[in-house]
Image (cartoon, rainbow, N blue to C red; front, side):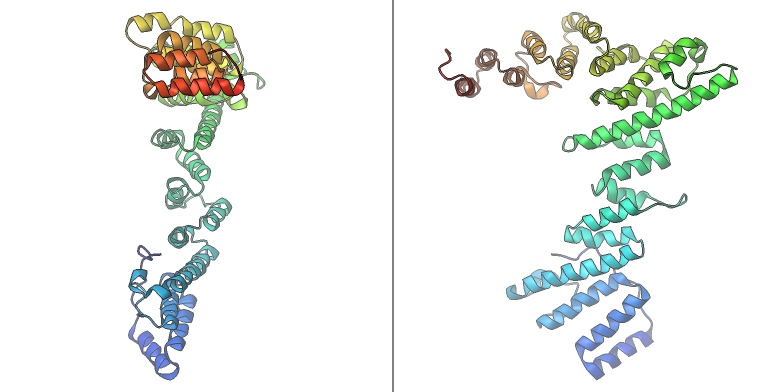
Amino acid sequence: METDGIPLAPKYGPDFYTNLRAAFDSGGGERAVDALADELRNAGEFQQLFYALLLKSRLKLGVSPFPTGPASDLPADAHEAYEAAIREGGRHVGGLHLERGEIAKAWPYFRMLQETEPIKAALLAHVPEADDDVYPLVDIAWQQGVAPELGFDWILDRSGVCSAITMVGSSDFASNPKLRDYCVQRLVQALHAQLRERLAADLIQRGLSGNPDETIADWVKTHPVLTADDAYHIDTSHLSSVVSSAMQLTPGPDLDLARDLAAYGAALSPMLSGTNDPPFEHVYKDYLPYLNAIAGVDVEASLAHFAAKIEPAVADGYQFPVEVLVNLYLKVNRPADALALARKYLAEEDDARLTCPGVLELARRVGDYNAYRETAAAKNDPVQWLAAIFAEAAIRPGAAI
């Protein structure tokens, strides 16, 4: 275990070193180190204290006393004891920093030890003051992955939706989809609350009333003046980013808030909503039926909405609308329809390049081994073809193949 990266403390005055020499002359090495450790601990110089503890362990082991040297310089029979001394010293000094609320200073020690739980507990218990710089702690929580949800919350609550959207957009959630869902839920909640507050203020200013039990969609439908003359109430780039991210959500209150945001966007002037590539070329008017389908609202109409976009897109050599509808079929628990659509349009595509499951995966999910074998044969993949034989035989012994 190496100790590189733990910074050294400032220099000390001449009397300090004179006293250390006196301790050494009168009581030997261990007494001198103990005296040094006491002085450093009382002075709060915990970085140097760590190295003092390592120095003491080296004296006991009878090896080179220099504590900043690599552990590989020690004899092989001393490695285990010295590693234990590093762990003990790191926990002690890191713990002293945590007792003083110095989480960022404690982090290098616990990171060295690969022990993140004490830091996570300290982060979760920490309540920053209004003028505190939380970015060093955000780095530990988010970038280092110690408490990413908390790191995201600090950015959202202190720096706002824009910074939080940037944070999400620049992150890879492939290994942690639950964190992605958490971030999207928080963004939806924050943007919806912001929009509702501003709409309520606009209604009051106009001498109108908005029933607090009604949704934003109800308000803009009842009071079209709210979005007339190219009016808007929140940054439309934030709105489109959050609504598009919400397509990953599952049915529940947060999805309903996202649908409300999409309904507001659909009421905006076309000059403000912009355009996207198919099948979301009309932005909110396309996002809304997608979110509705996931929520179980107007499912058939929503599916038909996206099915109508496929042939024109395919005629132009653009298959992304097919992939979108395959995913939507899966979200509404219609895998057989997803498979039929994929077989029609995606059978020859490289599955790795798709944004939806390919035909082989869909056939496996459905248990349609005929489709699996036909697709495998078309792709010249005899391994997958034979795997389907085995899979079907396992669940239907004696099945005619």
